[in-house]
Image (cartoon, rainbow, N blue to C red; front, side, top):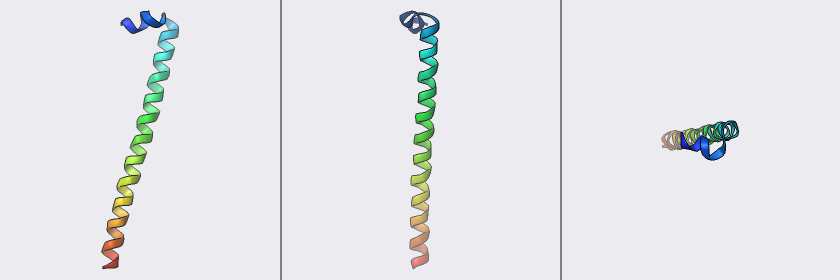
Length: 52
């Protein structure tokens, strides 16, 4: 890969690994937000159904 040559070997690999980890964290956070949003929507639907 050309990326490794740009960074310079092992340091570049470490940076890449760190970036991957950050991306994974971001993806997990976004996933949690999506779940919360859909759960709130479900709660709102349930509340309106209960209310009448």
